[in-house]
Length: 287
Image 1: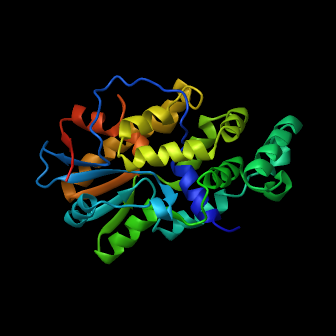
Image 2 (image 1 turned 90 degrees about the vertical axis):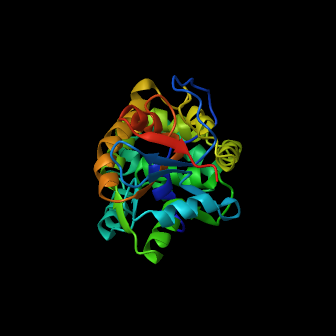
Image 3 (image 1 turned 120 degrees about the horizontal axis):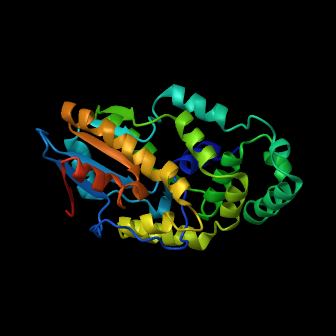
């Protein structure tokens, strides 16, 4: 199916909306997608970059400061190493459901999904019956961007890494992301989220991203309508804690450019705050 790879990839990397706001306990962060990580024994700085994962081609941008930081690094580390053929194969396999949707959803849920699909994509539930609900979610989310020319930041960074002979790695696998996403939401919660995915919400997300406002991206992503405390711990906090345990060794070996979803940067248990608590100096790169 056209754009299936892009949409599946992007949806597994981020759940977004411009929903109810949630307060953060950590200090307000400066508007910057790029952060320098230094100190705590590092001989050279590494960099942390927040991505939106997918964006319309007309809205895509990569600042000069990000390009310079990328050139100064020796390794690119993403949430998932999408340059690994094994990960791509796993993604293609997991896009298909373990069972048809009409076997795992109730008649009422199927009817609700059918209405959502027809409204957002012009498709029927019968056409996606063999896909996982997570895959269907990705197809609906990509439609909310309102364009056919979708760019994935991860794939753009991979191309840059190849040109500059950077090593490429990942913090987790597509299998683990599938499991996290499937366990984080019930089927009813997923359907509710899908029914609320609108072009207006996508536009707000893109606007905040262009302003590099990672606090607002975090606030909008963790709205009470989207994430319970349990879901937030699975989707964001738990993964952040896991990543921050891996990052020190990677940064110690070589200057590394970490590119992860921007929603992971802010918040009390965001990567920036966790790295600071671990003794690193983490500061925004403004130019």
